[in-house]
Length: 260
Length: 355
Image (tube, rainbow over all chains, first blue to last red; front, top):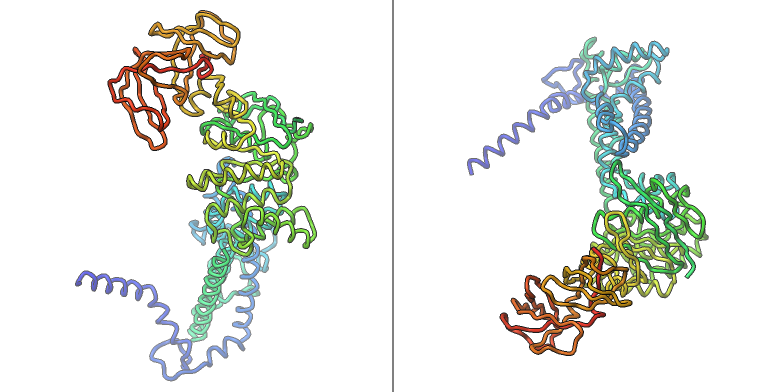
């Protein structure tokens, strides 16, 4: 019994440790004060109003959505194609190539950022949406690859062979069999890609110009300039959006699973 | 029977490993041919090459007189049934069976009608809207079967389709498939490692060993007239006895055993006097009695053990240095261990096999 209690206490403390920053910031989104500190004098939605009316914040939200959507599309297509290619076991150095795809996950973002800036400058893509989307895609692709490879590994290869023998061309096999079966993995990958883009600051600092300030970038700079509770409101939006997307994916996946 | 499929000097290497070696095989239209052999004997590889999933390293595969080596799988018009069923898990039973018809761009009404007929053929009409995962293994395999037959393919290929089913269901399905073959007259190439399955279902059986065909013939031929030691041992159970040919008279040969006894036996291939050979004697062809009978061949033996196996008695015998096994029907007498008996069999009940 004391052991059980100790376990429970330990688990609670770990969870508290993980969510403490959230607990610290979220209430401040509803403060009426102009500075980001406790205690909260009274409750108000003025900072959400600020978020949606102030030009800088509105643009930031808009930019995040554009760049997030672009990154999601690009990373999902590239990552899915890469995973399909990596299925070919006869491919030389298959293991090494897979590791290469996952490298951006572990390479320090600062290093990637510097490299990216030099490279994009060469193509004249710094300070452009395309540049930021490309940079975000580099860090988002590994998440898609991991997720889609997992889904593809669960497909019995013979199901695809059977489809071929029944008269389906390789393109039709992909469209009617492989893709639908890998869809849960592709969707999870897409969500992770969007989340990665939404959250990315370091690369954005290196490659984005003033016109591509994303929400994360805007929060980062505004906390240095003026400690306005609008940051807390933005953080609140972030968390709510993330939870909603997560729920949607769980729901969709269970729907797919039920159809099986 | 007109030849429909021809494997012309097919060789297949996986890296340095030769899995099929210079193989020739012809299959007639409407014929049911089993490729029988242990795992790794090349039978599945040959089927995969016929389906177009694998390419032969050298040699040609001809279908109706035309080489199909360069024809991709989806244009070969062959239905394939796998051991793992390989149904589309994201489609209903009806959608699974409709798939090959959709690929052939048939009209909706015709697709619906043919799907209904194909499912009716395997008694699964009631399951049209179910998912494959909601069906039992046997039902799933019947769906796979009707999916492979619904588009009236030129050939149906089956890769150990009954291997995942339990014994009773497997035997029922064997008869069902045989019945379907007779009704539809479709050409079937069937891969199995189960010899009784091959004997039950096939018009002809090709026995594979190490990438080569050891023997091809009707079930009766491969069982009663095994051409090689491998075939005799792989199909059913047999007693292999060493000896030397003393004389050959037409289709019969006299063989002297090491014990000095003489056996007169049928010959399938060609043997010469003085040649060391094996005799294959099927255990169920051996009769036991305490007195020397009329039979051409009679060996003096002693019963060492007798095992009751339900439908038959399995008697172990010792003749000089040579152990023998006899399977006796339930109506026959039982002999306690230690009894001296004569093991009798006719010349047609044993075979001379060149080693």
